[in-house]
Length: 398
Image (tube, rainbow, N blue to C red; front, side):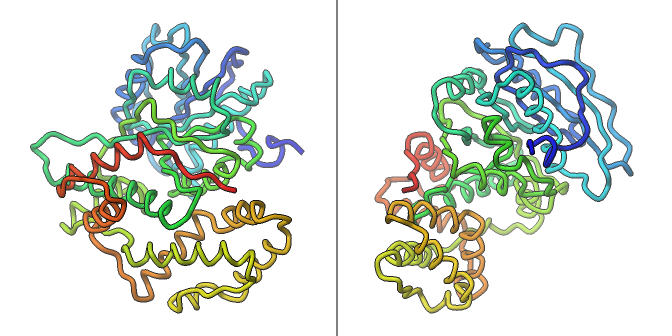
């Protein structure tokens, strides 16, 4: 059975037929977004690609809430290469959230692209509080035409407010530094599917979107869980352009950027992140799981006895038994010990004797370990990690 009969959202939001030349569709969920036009103008101001691009916006709200006034675009807002569609929709209260909104949009994009057999075309995630670099559309077209990967993470940098709000600026710098440190810490530990999972900066080809079961309907973390499914199919870092998300605080989701900033502003404590000791323990875990292919034995750190239960060890033994070579074993191992299981392992360590540390401490430790010169200031370390992310080549499985 096809994706659309098994997994897709049952209702369509557009009754306008797609243009057969469309190759890129950008999806934007919008909930209580009074500045949506700033995002759309940013896209409209981009350098034009040679392929046709659509922008789908779902101005959504829970059915029990009154919506904001609908965003009405000027008559001449569309361009020859860029078409905008804004639709307003009430979502069931029980399911209303960013996951369902993204799913409705991305399913609509998949349908529109598949109508003319555009299986390699791109479905892009963006948010309604972002701006983009003026080469954003060109970079997407470059990925579309020349990159062999099935998905990707676009480079991003949170906008920092002016000096009049120094605490907000520090809050967003701490949060972004945590995100970047966490990815590099995973890679140091041995993970190969360690990439940013930011919903406003993600790309997937239409065929892989459908093959992996599409977007989920989680009210937070939907981007993380979705991209975990995409990464094993081939994943790129799209560093030739930049998305600029907003640093604003928010209470709309239980975790994520807005919640992290809001918490930082309210409690006044520096953002915490995973401790160096936890990362070093995770590194030992990866090394031991790799040698398990040859030895059939695990000599894990004692602190993790309660995490690697008999069921997990049986899973690992099954992977080993079903792998004809070490290369196959490594690939299957990384598919099994994915970002979700890795995060659960770190949380287990946190709860069992290795507490988190201030993000400045963790970020500085990893840079020192890699012998990378850096300033000691928060801004200096963030600048260093941004440069690393623009210039480094992610590890590959196998």
